[in-house]
Length: 257
Image 1 (cartoon, rainbow, N blue to C red):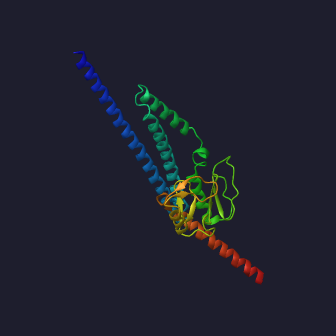
Image 2: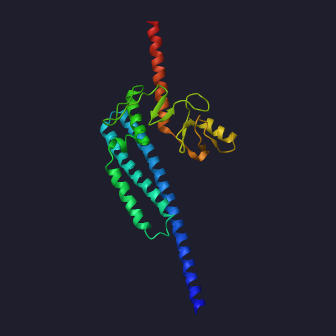
C-alpha cells in the first residue's frame, strides 16, 4: 500500500515537472515571438520614415505629422513589448513560486504606471528611433543646420557635416571599411553601425562568415544576416553628396566672379 502511494506521488511529481518544462518551453517561445514582433516594428518604422521623407519633400506636413503620431504610438507599444519580454523571462525562472503570477502582474502595473507618468521628452526625445526619424525629416530641407530641440527643456546637439548624431550614436556617411562615401549602405541590427554593402560582406567573408564590427571601440560581432538595407541612409548620403556638389559649384562660380 505504502509502495503504491509512493509510486503515485512520484508519478505526480514527474508529471508536474513535465508540465513545468512544457510551460517553460512555451514561455521561451513567447519571448522569441515578442522579439520577432519588435523586429517587425523596426521594419515598419523604417518604411514609415521613407514615406514621411517623400511627403516632406512635397511639403505635405499634415501627413508627416500623422506619421509622427503613429510612430509615437508604435514606440509606446514597443515599450510594452519590452516590459512583457523582460517579465516573461523572469517568470520562466520562477515557475515553482506560488507568488509568481502576482509578482508578474504587480511588476507589469508598476512599469506601465511609471511609463504613463513619464514626459514626452523622456519617452520619445530619448528614443533613438524617434530622434533619428525627426532628424531625417529635418534634413530634407535643413541639411547642415542643427536640429532644434524636439521638446521643451531638451538639450540641443551640434552635428558635423558628415555625421548625424542620434542620442550618442554617430551615423557616418563614410564606410568604416573603405573610408569612402557609403554605397548601397547596410546597417547592423546588432550595433547600428553602417557600411557599404559589398565592402562589409567581403570583410565578413574574409573573416570566416562572422567577425567583430570593424568600427573602433565596438565589441559586437556581426554576420550577413544581421545586416539590413538602409534605404533611409542611402537617401541621406545622396542628398548630402548633392549638397556638397552644389556648394562646390557655387564656390567655383564665386571664384570666377
